[in-house]
Image 1 (spheres, rainbow, N blue to C red):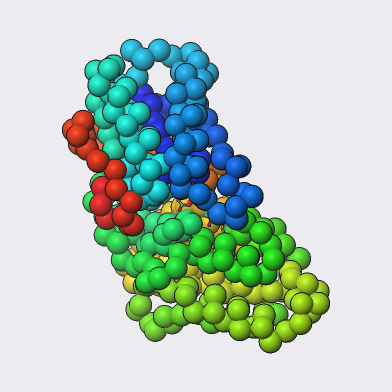
Image 2: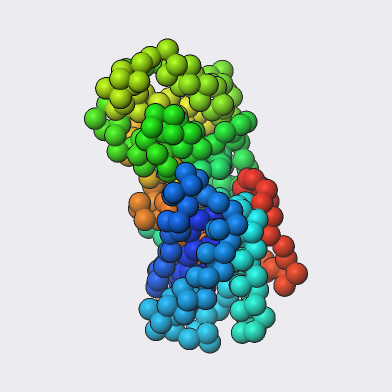
Length: 336
Ligand code: KG4
Ligand code: ZN
């Protein structure tokens, strides 16, 4: 049985996992850096330093938890883009050092692709072709997979990502950081049709996303109403903003599935944890005769098991990284 030891350090979670080739997760340890919350966002240098401090201990703990030693590991995998460059460099340098000293192959993985492959950890039988909607803090992309390794990005955000929009609008509504979970929670008590916020790029056939106008619309709305009114209607406003963020995600994903006759849809990324998005996309996909897969909530957050899952097809194909490979911060699922 082939086993991959994988590392994830692209943002503010340090994670180490060991996964077998049938996608069984032997361990998936995640150390979340709570130190950023007092700053209202992730501080890149602090993130790098905390990865540096934690990664070795997490690796020792992962091997211990799985009762394995280095000789039981077939390959190492690490995410190298996109993300905070300092954080990525910590994970990559560590993975390279182990690959060199243990004499094991190294597989490098795109972080967005890893989010998509989190779905295989829950349902290993998923077969291409499928459409993946990846929605995270920094990215929003619609990707058509023809095979596990050949894919086409058919839509992407032209400005802000969906997760970033949750975070920014939550801040404006006084809901704190990270905004996505806070909006998700309070929206369950609100009316999504309370306030009408704009949905951009509604033209038929346009599969791109745009969220920059939404933040301005929320700012304008808040400036027209008193602080008391806003506090009184916080849940309704959160639910209305949430619906304005998820509507285009749902509509464009289903339009693309219909156009391209794709019957399998995978949701992925941090925003895939959103209750309303999971429910509405699942219901509307079913009405179209398509099946939606969402990762379990603990696999929607950044974790190394998804990095291992995305590394297996590359490892099997012999697509290994040289030890002078570099990390890069660039956006997107295109660069692998
Ligand atoms: O995938 P991720 O860790 O970030 C990147 O890889 O870029 O996702 C983090 C994002 C944050 O913007 C956070 O607010 C959002 O995912 N998020 C949510 C929920 N949980 C996390 N957004 C909406 N509803 C949620 N339940
Ligand atoms: Zn992520």
